[in-house]
Length: 344
Ligand SMILES: [Zn+2]
Figure 1: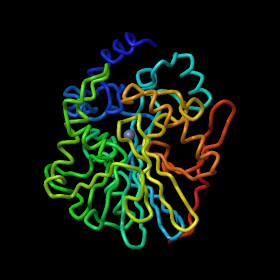
Figure 2 (figure 1 turned 180 degrees about the vertical axis):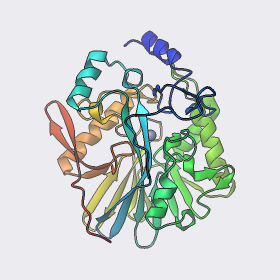
Figure 3 (figure 1 turned 90 degrees about the vertical axis):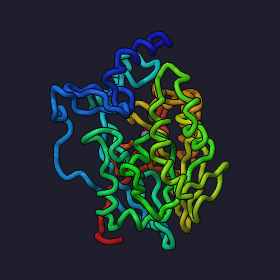
């Protein structure tokens, strides 16, 4: 697909895109944040045959050394691959979906993570709150309650990047939902998204990310609750920042270590599992720097494969935890063996 095609495609979805840039569901219109909202002609969200209705909050706790980590499920959102994927022929999409036993749109989980270190309660990302529209995400706080905690009990929130699905839940109107938490993020990411002049420089209009950053982080900034870092290294005891630029300029992975155990929590390393493990070079229309995003993904896949390192992804199917192994010219995702033994 050349850039003219991209522009045409973006133009054709400009009135019906999801926050991820591509969901197309009947009876939906774009809300003020550019996310899907029920349209005036159809007050109820369109029926989605893939998505059974029911109790959504969900948690997956597991031990990592002395730490307890819990995936907090925020919900899931549809992704329209022909719109979303850059330079990807329909025949490739058809083949990948067939191979993965999926149909378009595919579904992306939204995972946040709670880490109990013994001395601190830390979250990595926090879900989308109300920013994604009704029935798309927004359940992370309920999942946190299911894990046994109120938002005021959280000490630190480490943000992977400033797309609304990762931190929209930090505010409720003007109110800080996590009144005692310090928000940690990359200085590069913070200064980029707090300056609206950085928006609209590409075919894909990303201006709403900048409005969201100022709206959500403003109350924390005024309360002196934002702390930025400018290089790799420990952010809170046991958790280190690993720069992962590309998807956004200051996109950050977090390396969590306790005793001899390590997990890399990798934010938006993958959005479309059916594609991006087998073909890490596949990028999305809303990657800020597509080549950088692809390079970061390929480099980290090679690293974690060599290390046999456990990883987690914000948009890999809940609970989003597993390993990456080499598979032909690309890689494959191996989810963890789901385990429950009562309280850990
Ligand atoms: Zn995301």
